[in-house]
Image 1: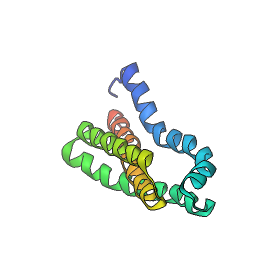
Image 2 (image 1 turned 90 degrees about the vertical axis):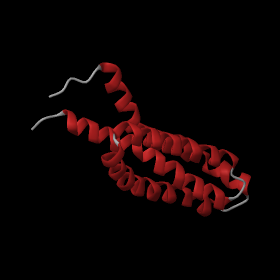
Image 3 (image 1 turned 180 degrees about the vertical axis):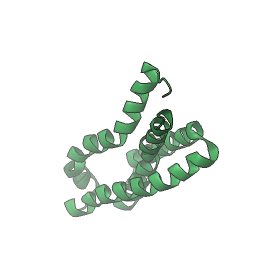
Image 4 (image 1 turned 120 degrees about the horizontal axis):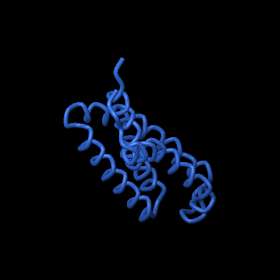
Length: 126
């Protein structure tokens, strides 16, 4: 078994938990988003479904990408995509833009989960 330093372990814990923390922080704001965009609560709740779809596709794609370009570049790619999606969420002025932005955000966030789990799996022999 390879040794993993404490700062690296702490970073991996944060990266694995980040997508779920991000979703948990977002959920209470749904009524306010509904009012701001002048749409129904049902339409805003679609952002949760789109987030999970983006996350699922991201796990598949970024896992595949990390096998090709390496773990670190794939993680950095995911962080950049997540940041771009978050910025687009911030400036979204319609439900359509918000839905697309949430998909992009989740796609990037999936890197933290899939790449970290892959690194941990590769750190253990047996």
